[in-house]
Image (tube, rainbow, N blue to C red; front, top):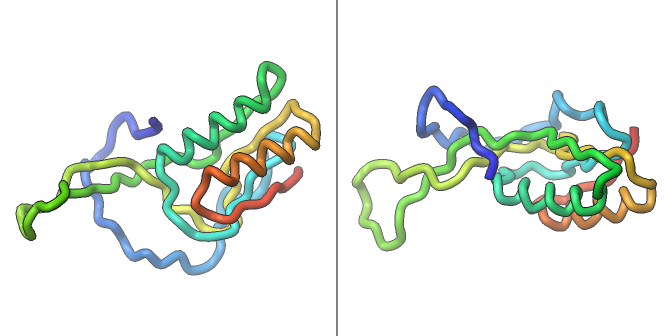
Length: 136
């Protein structure tokens, strides 16, 4: 799955789960003709990004191209089940990316409008947030 090659610190604070406002960066379709825009705020994991990428690449086949506009660089830790309180912070379990509403998550190009609409619809089903299709 996607994860950083190198990080300055292995574990990070969770941070405030305060997704106030809309995304200020990455809100325009820049590379492809069609994009998948987030309508809600949520953490998206590396596994969810990979599942979405597979759906989009299946639709584009050899003619199209897929751009992933987000990268999971936030380590999420977890402790094992039935571990007593204390004992420090758990080990890194997976990586996630905090997403705000308005952020473009994926872009595709080289496919017809109808195929792109179906690909984006199926890709949105793989994510834990509401999404919509946007055109350049």
